[in-house]
Image 1 (cartoon, rainbow, N blue to C red):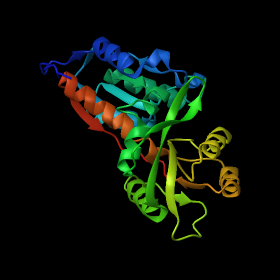
Image 2: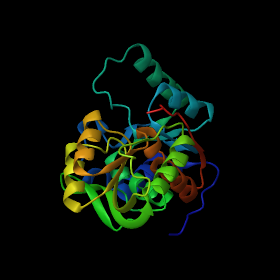
Image 3: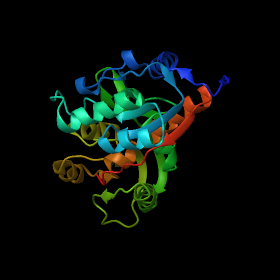
Length: 267
């Protein structure tokens, strides 16, 4: 893909949004209602620097403004907690964004599933795994990926810990009794990836190791009964790669400044 050079004067927000919407198939991808994918807050129309963060929060808004970025791209957007009165901290965040002329663009499942910039394909590569099939069916799409390997599970766990710890995360692994265990079929679904649906799908597909961000306590119990090991490497850590890669793409394509905001939750 040819990268078009831009002057230091910036790029129109509408041009960047149109590119992101097409790239991510924003409006063709089903999602949870509160995700509200796409442009969530406009600015006066010009972008000179892009910031990227996993979550929309007071921390990420403050860091964006400090870095003098005027487009914030996030994975979990402004409306994740649902309808709230615009008072106190909610008001202050909006006030700061308006005052600094910062736009906000959010991409949840469209980013999770993307074949190039997706959290799942990028995390698989980070862990040294080669995806060959989709995984984690949601409505009429697949969010995650799966594949085959002949990798000692202990090696996979080591890679997961190295990755997560660098991002302030903490890895939890179920069923570590067999030190010689080998992962032969794995599946990966970032974020809240351990659920009844993904466990059923993993069992059906013969998956022996499931890699996720997080999941309810009962999923560890159920996985053990099914003979599946789950590697929980943290919701935040598992979803850093996509949004940072997307910011790099926008920065390079439109010749804009770029900053990546680290705001780990420990979860």
